[in-house]
Length: 167
Image (cartoon, helix red, strand yellow):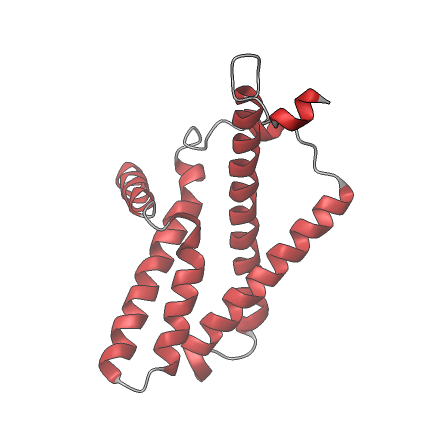
């Protein structure tokens, strides 16, 4: 039974790849669109799409628990220390993104969900936003490392105009 669940989670998390880091905002927007739609057909289609994306996001979040070796090598960001001011920025960004996701989902769910669910939804969406920020910082660190490697002795050199070289 456990091996089947593991295979399902791995398969679902591989389907998440086309949207990548934009899946949470896409799912939240679909929830909001389903809540604001007056057409029952569009309401159902948007709601089903949002639920499918939520399932894929959940599988992507659960993947490290089933397959610990899936996460990319963190050597690029291992050299960058998380300072206190940067931690505040990341917490603020995660809170802002989590608030946006929570608002959009709550608009989509409507008054089916009581207001007591808002803090729970906010915490979950803030954790998802924190994970996305972590992956975005990882991509930026990899790009910086590749740029530094290219600026080596045989790589791309900064452009120097001929006028400045004559001075």
